[in-house]
Length: 70
Image (cartoon, rainbow, N blue to C red; front, side):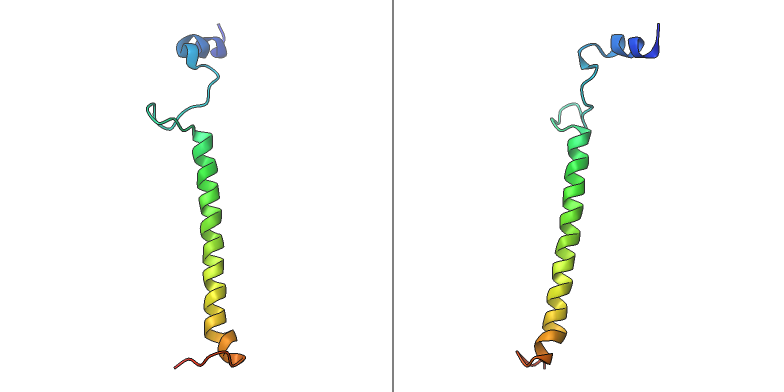
């Protein structure tokens, strides 16, 4: 008997289905990885916006005379 047949007999109905993070959480590992990638990308996007805003407030605005820092 091959390994695949042994695994199929051992898992029964669970064979071929995506593995869940925890048995009682209806989220698969692939979905959790996708969520992690999206949130990481969003965090970097937010950091980039924050840096651009800081550069604008600190350097660009005062250079063009839009406001003065005190």
